[in-house]
Length: 148
Image 1 (cartoon, helix red, strand yellow):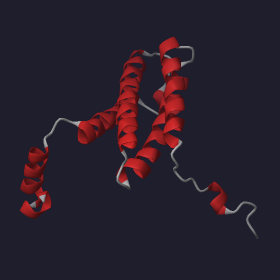
Image 2 (tube, rainbow, N blue to C red; image 1 turned 120 degrees about the vertical axis):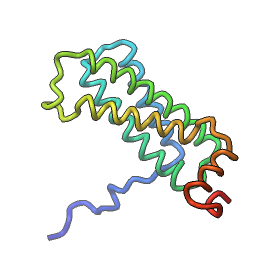
Image 3 (cartoon, rainbow, N blue to C red; image 1 turned 135 degrees about the vertical axis):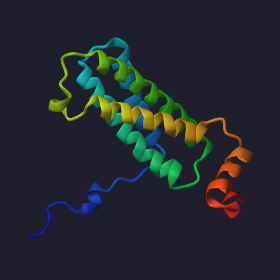
């Protein structure tokens, strides 16, 4: 039986406009958080979706290739914003009484772990560790040839 859709129709390729897509999602999320128009569950879902798109672009633009200065600037700003939103949602989720994590499949521990992962990622990419210190740690862990 022949497939109705060719798989290549669904392939997703990153292009220069993709930081704009993340920026649009982030701006919608910022509005939702500021105005608290929607239920917490909606804000969690919007944040989770924005984070998923961000991670995909991060992989393609920052991890898999040499990032441009523009990529680094967008990445740093979006990472910081999404981390901050996650921390705010974590606080709101902790105080919320109406959401049963068992029902929604996204518990407090999941959210806390995701936010901590963003904190670690931000420190890893943009922390204040000097190049000399980084090389020293790499040499201690993996041997002198790894720091070169």
